[in-house]
Length: 236
Image (cartoon, rainbow, N blue to C red):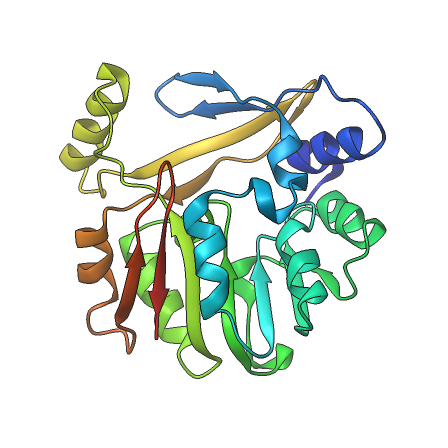
């Protein structure tokens, strides 16, 4: 990743260094733009996590891959619970922030590049809506099959794209379906000040879509933990 593309990393680094009023801008490919509440959630202690993510911690075991580690909130909590964690993120600055906060093994690596050189994992954790890293239907099936010999379990949070009455979101879902994409397949980029990431696909799915997506990949949905705005799926 080029330095000028690491908008997310610049954001979390600014927050780490004391700039508490920074805002993340998320831009969608239909022109929809939204400012988040800020990066505090990326640094939140476990008591401030969504309830489904807190409940999902009891399904995380053994050696863990934290996919899309961001500022390290999940890796730090799991380390405190005695887990061995490999934390990865495509953002070099986010990995730097995670290491500075105490993450022992942080690596700059895209999720789709995960391979046997990292070793085997008991659990892959994809919190913070990071089921989205699967990107879309074809990519998700490909990556799920790739992960099958590398991990025993996936614990991921996502949100149901249909839990909205926002006309802009509903129109985008319809546009996706017309183009042969999943309703919740988002094309996004992140902006912060004069930094802008490259465009990327990010997938949100309903529980029913999740069941269909994993069918035939060697995974099954063991449990769905409901929550708002995120729910957690446990795949074995």
